Image (cartoon, rainbow, N blue to C red; front, side, top):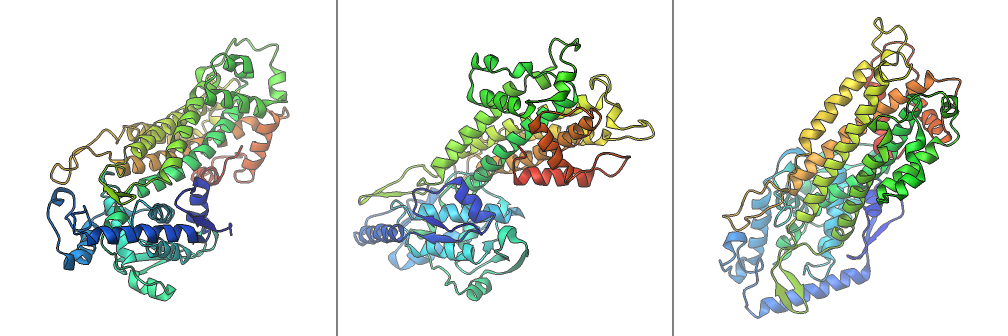
Amino acid sequence: MPPPVTLTGQDLTVSDVIAVARDFARVEIAAEAAQRADRARAAVEELMATGRAIYGVNTGFGKLANVPIPDDKLLELQRNLIRSHVAGVGDPLPAEVVRGAMLLRANVLLRETSGARAVVPQTIAAMLNAGIHPVVPEQGSVGASGDLAPLSHIAHAMMGEGEVDVADTSPRGAGGSARVGAADAMRAAGIEPVEFQAREGLAFINGTQVQTSVLAFLVHDAGNLWRTALGAAAMSLEALLGTPTSFDERIHAARPHPGQVRAAALLRELLAGSEIRESHREDDPRVQDAYSLRCTPQVLGPVADTVEYAAGVVAIELNASTDNPLLFDGDVLSGGNFHGQPVALALDMLAIALTTLAGLAERRLDRLMNPETSHGLPPFLTENAGLNSGLMMAQITAAALAAECRTLSTPASVQSIPTDGNQEDVVPMGMAAAFKARRVLKNAQRVVACELIAAAEGLEHRKPLKPGGGVARMQQRLRELVEPLAGDRPLTPDIERVAALAAREALV
């Protein structure tokens, strides 16, 4: 079990999100942060006592912001807000995404700008520690005014209403989960349901935390996949008798994009000490390799730079005030920090970058299959080709996934449709971007898995020559999951095992 994660409202990291959401690290609330939240709440109470109109406290919402709400209806206003916004549809979000969103929301509500009592984030922490996860449909948010529907499903469960999944809180939830009523789960865990006070319901659902939760996982997982994809590229280069000359440090210093420089350096490291390279250094008639081999740093480098950009967005968003209105030293200011455009753009950019990664891997995979481009490897990497089909279908599967990625990489963040009586007339569609980017990541992991399997098989045909040390270590790791091809066999188990490994960690 990883060490506890203590929330302060100021220093949450992607690593913290991974620890809590995937590995069930315990969540604690810093005492100072809880005190700060309660002081901000006291300021809200003082403002309410003046009788002035405060959006979302004693007014309606959105287009109804000019409708005054009497004092004796303020709690009902918050309950109605949550219940009416429980409108999500579709399949439930994965538990890790919901856990991540809960953690992010608890962290943000500890900031003095929100005006929610400390008991609200404390209740979220208690639910996380008990493995209680609201059932949150993945569709129904346009990402402006925050992820209203998804966050409302979480708030609804905190009220003791709706359904939740109760998970085994051991690492990776090995014991599965059971779906029960929220009230029963809260009662069994000894957690008191929340009665949202004036302002608190709106403070809870105004935020980008669900789409940001997805972005946090994508940044983490895409970084791992990028390293694995470079490993696959190095393996394919060796199997195809390619040359590492194009990775020379001098070439990349002449065009020093950070990701490109990193990619070339890692490729040099993986290929160092290659017997395969030495075997054809003098008599290879090729002056240079095809783009899918030679230009790997120039293609995968920008992918790394895009991941770094997205990491910068998520680092800010994890500790940002994204509700509305915000409190500043007695002032209540209405603004638009709930707008998810920064997150939606980062998600779309990641989908495009990962599509590029998958497309490059598929092209190298195709070269490994084709005897016209594989430099002496048997067709489809199998003996007795014709009688055997070998890894033919691995490339076809990869082609299907790469094509789907291209369709999914059409940006969602430019697809605005006005909502709320045209009050919310420019929206970022952040959850649509998140849905697509998650699918692209899974596709890309499987495409790279197909390349790894084929490249490892190609290296079998180059024996007794040994590849570079880094490539040899990767091949050895791969052989723990996938045996060499002795004849035709179902490929799905092999692909899924390797893809699952690529989803968990970087193979390089």
